[in-house]
Image (cartoon, rainbow, N blue to C red; front, side, top):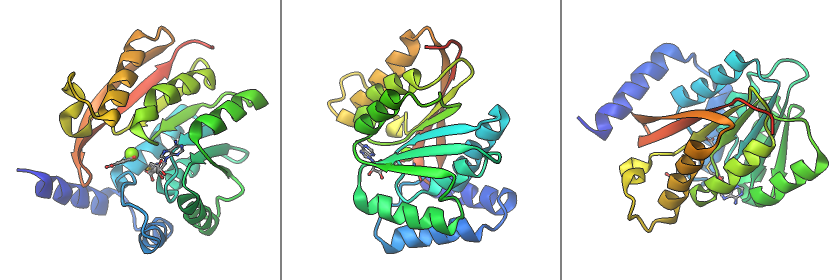
Length: 224
Ligand code: SAH
Ligand code: DHB
Ligand code: MG
């Protein structure tokens, strides 16, 4: 039992639980045609993000790491009228593909895409004094996760939810001697969650179409 079975089960669950979705399909097709890496969340993970946002009654979402906008679309669809989402992307080509995908999804009025290094955009948001976000999804470069968590905490309030993708890295996260910058970033991220009095957090290992990885979930229990 390995990767092939995990992918098969993901297909089974997707076919059964997730209705056909022409908008998401065309988003993936456009991303593939533009040669973006196929590293977006899986369909069941995308729906998990949407459901978490809906359960939370989320009105304001921040995403760090847009790629072609696949997870962006899942999340933005959870928003009620008047809701708002900001998504941050470094790569101009990824941003261009995402903008087209968001427009096709009819979400270009709801989602604001900020291009550039996430740390710069996050500092801008803080400087602008934007309202706190109800849900923050961290999914950009893994070495940056500690810094993104620090900003996420600044931009959140009591009741906010922070979700992070790729926090297990094929199991490498348990290797304290790893020299891999991604692994070190994710380990530091978990340590920060452990030591942060403002959050209650957990992490879950996952297998599926994207291999062996994991999601972290943190609930913010106090204002900054
Ligand atoms: N959330 C997407 C996948 C994101 S992949 C989805 O599930 O559909 C990670 C993205 O983070 C890539 O597009 C990459 O270009 C972007 N990225 C990498 N480093 C970044 C940085 N420093 N600032 C902003 N985005 C960054
Ligand atoms: C990779 C996977 C991701 O989900 C991501 O956000 C970034 C990178 C990867 O497999 O390299
Ligand atoms: Mg990811």
